[in-house]
Length: 91
Figure 1: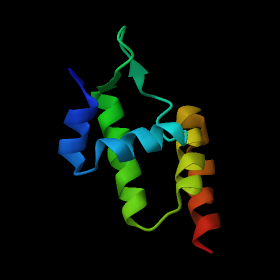
Figure 2 (figure 1 turned 45 degrees about the vertical axis):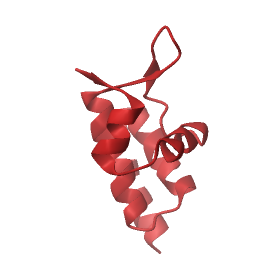
Figure 3 (figure 1 turned 60 degrees about the horizontal axis):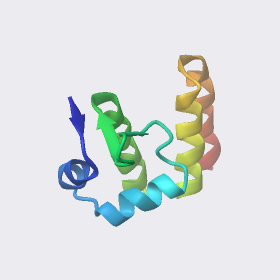
Figure 4 (figure 1 turned 90 degrees about the horizontal axis):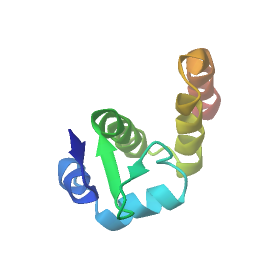
């Protein structure tokens, strides 16, 4: 199943403008676009977007969330780096 930006907006209570802003800031490199150029979110994308929202709700800065997402995009081999990154930004 796929979701539109409007679906994601409703699911997470985040404005469409905010989702577009996150995309421009590089937080959504995993989101593909359809032939019309519209963003199309998969189940996996929904999960990652939820993670972004949770991290934002903790007060984490967007630059730090982007770095975390960059690690995620590299795959499971970065799990230790992700853990260490949280310790680094916590201090």
